[in-house]
Image: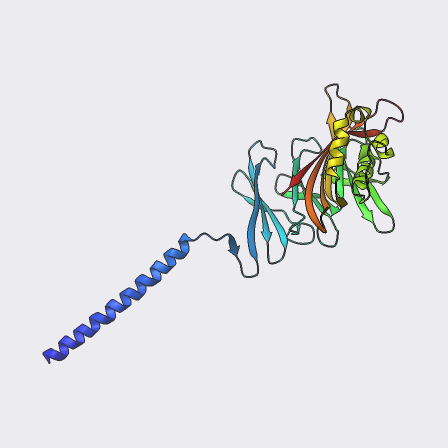
Length: 328
């Protein structure tokens, strides 16, 4: 009996010891998993990856909020949210779905914060694109309870200028319609949102027509001679034309370019010390197709352009300055 009791006691100790080892192993594995911080957050239906975080005041109270821009890599969509300075989180959906727009790797989302209607509450301008050549635009504004969508649609770009004479900037949008071409509409701030007031505008909005002409000329695959071209004399200011370095800069930039495609743009008035609006600042994003030997490669650029009203007839807006910055 003593031998059996000893054997039973030894066997029981072995079981307890083995059970203890198993529990310890599970705890160690769980701890190791917690130490590994994944790049993505896995959900049941998608994989969300952080794209960019911006710290800026979005509701006009003078304190910085947090804008989180995430990418749903499974659905190929952008998800944008704002956490205010009090820690409350708000999603910024488009009109049709929870995401703000499609994620296209070579055509990244662009977000601009600006107080368009000068009421001390900034607007949040979000521009994206998709593979069908639509350009979703959404503008949000804090209304005291949430970030409401005050303007949305598919537009190539926007310009900000006071066209109604009430000293409150309006929004001019461009939309390309197949068979018709570019159509420009004006929206003005009215009763808590932007209302369309004009759909019969020409492309000569404060020099944007000259920008289009120059970009088209630069994208030509044929030899470009700026100094002798009508584009040079018609689209640029006299001051710009006098500096030979400007022509040299554009000649060097346009070398081996076989095509340029507009992504999106934003234009806004530039106010001088005398209070008169005689110039506009434009920020445009382009995809450039450049020839390297027997290959054509894709490059991304931001163009910073200033158009200024001419002091001589016909008093049109001409390009005063133009630079291109390569993007990664």
